[in-house]
Amino acid sequence: MTARPDGHRDPGPHHSDLLTIGQLAHRSGLAASALRYYESLGLIHATRTSGGQRRYTRGTLRRIAFVRAAQRVGLSLDEAKVALDRLPERPAPSRAEWDRVAESWQSRIDDQIAELQRLKEKLTGCIGCGCLSLSRCALYNAADRAAEAGPGARYLLTRDPDDGPEPLPPAADPCGTRRGGH
Image (cartoon, rainbow, N blue to C red; front, side, top):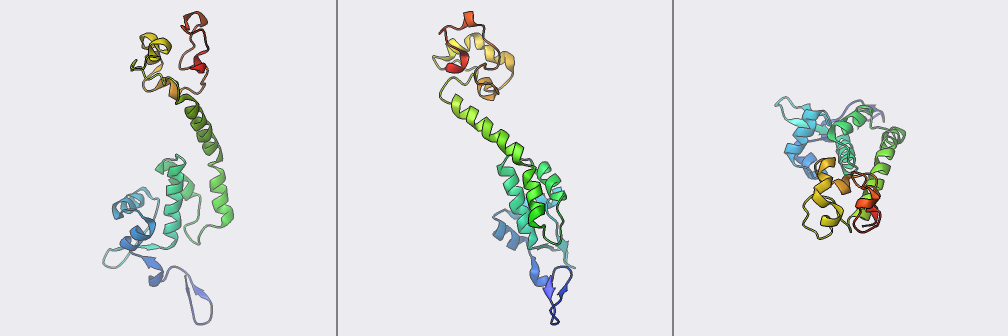
């Protein structure tokens, strides 16, 4: 929006309020190819000049920052798009509108914090990857029992640090300790 001599504002962006893709790339820290990709996904929107060049409103910087924040908390680009679709393109979203979208992430962030805490607790012990390369793996994951629970580092991926990917019968525990105590 631009100011007129009478103090009122013209609706819509003025050409001086628009950014080229190069300017947007510089300001956002993203490559122009990433911006074109974001545009193809509908995360950001451009207008076109008569010559077909992309022009972005300055508010696009806020949308890009939002997408990057969403990615940092583990949201996919599709999830970020769903959130952005709930916000107005113009005028810029209000604080309350941004807050509503951010609130929808709270449980996701809380889950990630809990997952990171579990990961932190497990990093000092056997991760149950099935490699049997650690001397303790032969004890905790004899015959690669973790593989029966699925691919990947099963003891890291398990939600319950005390039980591992599958319950270990007490008689089969070679050390006489609970599985989570390793």
